[in-house]
Image (cartoon, rainbow, N blue to C red):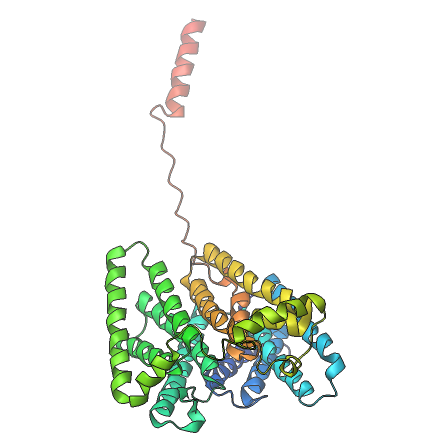
Length: 440
């Protein structure tokens, strides 16, 4: 699909510029979408105003597409939409027998709104150039900085609205979701710093604030995923400059120590909470009905029930949810839901690699690592209702490589042909003289 938002030379009979209409629709759509991204640090309500903003941005996307002369959708966006539809159909079919139960219909509605963000993000981003993606990244960083500041304030004051069990969460549902939400901002800051875009002081400060927010969430997988994604991007970008890579890693280590010391000095509860969380397994992870035990117990259930239990049914069997997006998709939504999610996750990695190989743009790598960090976190938690998870799935699949290609260099003017040392006219004269001698 073309992103040419029209020329002002195209005018219908009523005198209104078609190009101006396209430009207005395109700009308003992006403004609404970016506003929704900025507001994603508030998730205490479902459905929320954020969902309405995303839906509104899709309406403008549809109107923009209608205004184009060639209405087309990228093949990857269509494939992504079909995978999402398969996952949605799976949880709807599995839940049909339980529609009369309390909160089942509401839960289905909430999940539908959540995955619709992925669908919308794909349709929006398939018309984006690198500039639009970078604007999104800047807005997302701002949203995460706000969330991190709120979470830090909540931890320092132990304000109940901004914490859960003494852990920072801001205005997001829980600390684990909060930690995973902040991870992409660290990758995006590294992207801008590596390209020399923006203020180093501002971006470095943003990394410190966001990293502190993740640390105060005390999400073990969140901290590990954030460090992994950050180091992976830095290593990838500096793979041909080992000396610079060592200096950057050393600088990050020093920054991490400073953040740790700051957190320790500003809150007496920090060390107690850190030591409490500094383990591979808590009490709720172990035992007959602990998290890891539940992973084993649901395997026979998956094999015996290809349709799935449906939403809110597993909590009738276990005291807590399964806390694993992969197993949850299988046991709750059946084989269709499980294999749909595997296809979605693996396909996202493949699509990202293909995007990078075609464009050589590190944007594709930044989006992949951002999504990977979220997937890591959702592998130990209920990530299927995380709006930012579906958002990044949509951005990865909506990435239109044809709009990211570097501008082609103008073709060099053809060189003038080198004339022969024996010009044709001289050869002809010599040949005529030779013929004359033969005749004589």
